[in-house]
Length: 135
Figure 1 (cartoon, helix red, strand yellow):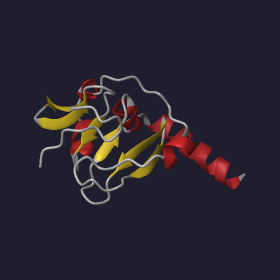
Figure 2: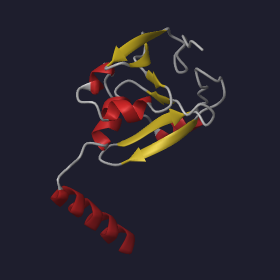
Figure 3: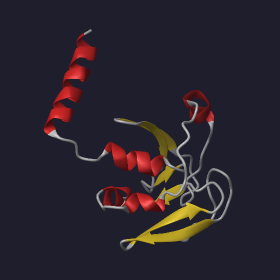
């Protein structure tokens, strides 16, 4: 099924191909639709963040949570996911087809959250989390 309308702004979606993975990007707001597993594929491919040509702008979480965003493929309401790692990030996912919607700049942040860091950086992060949960 072809999708062609942005779920956020109603703009036209264009096909973008990177390393044989096809995604849909809005010509107006530059948001990106990734079908099931495409985010997993692209987050591990060097340079794939180039598909996200937008600038990240943090949303107001209370406003963002109240906005209904329909899946461009299934037309059902998507849910908001909080990816809280190096960069806190809200994005939408469809519970039916498992596609993901990233606003402009969010895929870059998403990918950065999964970049491998050294063991020392990971250990410090774990210790901080433990300290915060024990406090």
